[in-house]
Image (cartoon, rainbow, N blue to C red; front, side):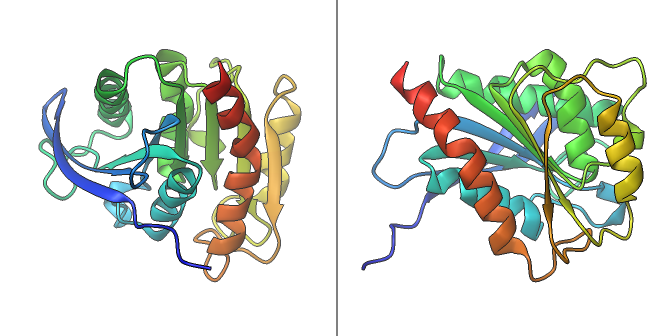
Length: 219
């Protein structure tokens, strides 16, 4: 069996709130995208960028499902202008990137995702972006405000059973206090960075989103 064609890559500079945001758009080869995905990277002050392996895996999972996936660097990271803003400005960056993506393909379903710090940004951005689905990996739930309502969309939480940075029991307690909706999937023996567990991570995303994307494409 021949390998699937490599996705088409496009390096971009997207207009952000404080200047250009460095971004990378990947689209399925020879296909109009069935939907759109925006992926947010981990903490900028701890080496997080759009090339992070978990972020890359999320993007490629969506591309494999026929979705155009946009990764971008938050302000002050790589070639993105501005400076780190403790999650406040980064929330604005995510909203700007989603606005650009929707402008490229108006009317398409949009899915939102993120890893660690980027997962918290994605959850907070969902109120404004109103995505059709959400995936968060290693969500630092303590970064969310207690008065924030959780996104009312199909939501997959992926978490390593051996996460050394985010306590699993505390995460489950937090989830139990939320309205029904978020689906927690534990990846056995995975640490916070999913070393050696990226195939399982990708499979979890593809299984969860495949029917959602098919339903959106049929509308």
